[in-house]
Image (cartoon, rainbow, N blue to C red; front, side):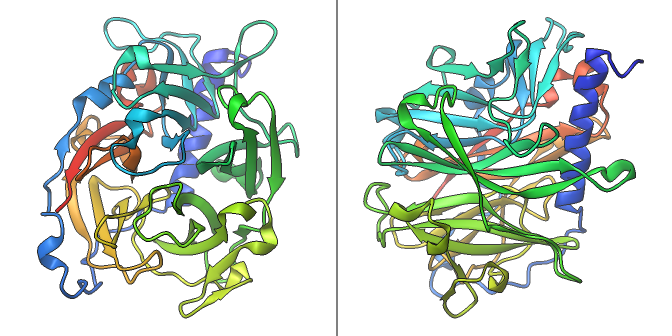
Length: 407
């Protein structure tokens, strides 16, 4: 097949994403947790494997025309209020990474001519998972062909995989992985850095007018220490977000990508200073410091995307895919935004990991404002390393959802 063929282009671009996924995630063996439980809280934690399916949310993203599948799913409330139940009173800005645009036939096969773009978004009214409430959006060229929603201004060869973000005082702040070609062979690409994207709230449906800034939130690998990147999850601990014990900071979570182990890092910045990179401070295990390279891990065995949410009882809930690429969604409880974090509690086994021998499940995270009070709505991604399976089994590549009842 010729490289100029659009079908080849779509599949090959997804191949780049999948190879980077494996490179960035590093598949480790599952090991027993060595973390100690949080004293006094064991009886208040969720029961292992107590999550239940949320098929109505899965159905919302199982689509046959236009937007037909993506990963990297994040939800950001327009109101800035993250409290469970608050989504009924606001709109939600969804952000996705590699996305198929095209058609899926009645047999579940993705049709030739489907295009893959690096990022798209959706705009949802309210918190009910009904088709009429959501509109999927991407850019188009003059001929009507799909384009990514946002592209780096650094080089035409670069692309964005957006991560988490927040609305604050009429603006969207969104962190994004900035990627570039590099290296050789199968790994002919690398991370170029972390960008902060900003947009006026009224422009976010298509990010019609947005600014992008390079950030100091990325540090290349150094010896045995893996590369550092922040922005995979954010937690606004503020009055506006409805946090139980607000301190006015936006907590920006990241990872140190050590071999076979994703390790959790924490930064914070005053909410009014998100775009002032000199105001960011990084947790070094005992205090907040100004050097990103001095951030120390506070938890281990994470996935490349995850979430941290405050709970009404003063604790914090970390939601993630155990050991990066696995069939296990797990949680940990923390006593502060930086921990200490308790033992790993597995809550769900992803059955999709057995759809084909090539299927992957990854990147679990919570969506607190779309959750009912007393529970957490959680999504995870499904993918395959066999490129043709994206066309023969289009249902693989869209997010799944579960509900976790919180004690």
